[in-house]
Image (cartoon, rainbow, N blue to C red; front, side):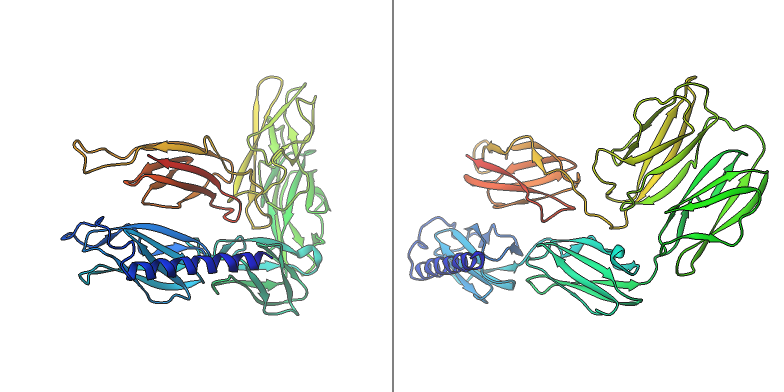
Length: 472
C-alpha cells in the first residue's frame, strides 16, 4: 500500500512539472515582467540541489530576459518546470541530473540535482568487527543516512550470519572460525562494507597492575576473548585467587610482587601484575581504575579499605552507573555498581564514570570506571525537542530605503544525543544553522511559509523536530 502511495506522489509531481514546463514553453505564466532585463540570469536554487525521491523544491529566478524556461537532462531522475519566476524541481528516482534554466535571450544557468540523501550511508558497526562463536556472540547495529530501504548481505554464511532487523538495524552472529564481509546497500545502490572476523576478540583485563595490602580483597575485570576464563598456571602462595564469570578475585596474604595469568577458551592469555605490600592502607577504593564495555551489564564490585569507622557515602557522576545500595552504609567492605537511571550503559564514545566515596571523617576516595564504546548497543536517547515549534520573522528587503535587514530567531534544542544536524525546506524563505544546542533561523527576501527540521546526528532515522517558519 505504501509503495502505491509513493508511486502516486511521483506521478503527480511528474505530471504537474511537465504541465508547468509546457505552459512556460508556450508563454503561459512565463511572460510576466517579474525579471530584470539586462541583469545576470540567476536562481536561488543551490547547486547541487539534494532531494529525496518523491519530494520537490521551489526556487526563484531573477535577471536575464523573461520569459524563462527549463531544459531537463534526465526526467527519469528529476523534472524542472517554470511558472513565471518560480522554478520547481521534482525528484523522481535516485541519481544525478541537471536542470537548465534559460531566458529569452539564450542565457542559461545549470542546477545540478542529486536525488538521494545529503546524509552519507553509515552504521554503528566498526569498519572491522571481531566476534566470537555462538548465539552469545550476536551483535546488533543501526544503519543511518543514505536512502531507505536497506538490504543486508553476508559473504560467508559458514562463518557468520547477517540479518536485517526492522527497517534500520542488522545483526551479525558468529557460526564458526572464519571471515567475510557484511554489505549494507541502500535504495540508491550506495554500499557500506563491514569486515567480519569470527574468532575470539582480544582478551583483556583491567587493571593490569594491582597494589594491595595483606588481607585486602581486590577485583580484576576480564573482557573479550572466549569464555569461560581460567587461571593460566599455578596460583602463588602469596595470594588467594578465584575466577567467577568475568571477575578475578584476589586477596593478598604475604608481601610479594608477582604475575598472575588469565586464559580464555581459545588459549589466549594475559597477565596481571600484583604487588602485596605490608602496612595499613589509607582510605582507598580497589581497583582505582578499570574498564568495561558498554554491553557488559554485570555488577561491578569494588573493595573499600582504610575508611574511618562509621558510614561511608557513595556517589557517581554519570547516570550509566550507580551504587547498588543508596545512601551511606555503615563500615562497608565493598561497594557494588549497577546500571543506573540511564537504563543502559550505552555511551557515545569512551566515557569515564567517577565513583566518589566519603567516610565519616570527611576523607575522600575515588575510582574511575571507563565505559568503552564498542558498538555493542544502540543509543536509546530521548526524542529531540525544541523550546518552540513555530516562529514568525520579517523578510529582508535590501533594496528598501533604508534597507531592511534579515531577522533571526534563536531556539533551544534538547534531547537526542546532543549532536544535531539541521535542514531548511526552502532556503529562499529561511536558512538555519546550529551552534551547540542553539538553532538560529534567519529570514530570506521572500514572504511565505516553510519549515526547519532538526535531526539527532547519531540517530538520523529518528523523527526530527519540526519548526514551522512564517516569513512576513
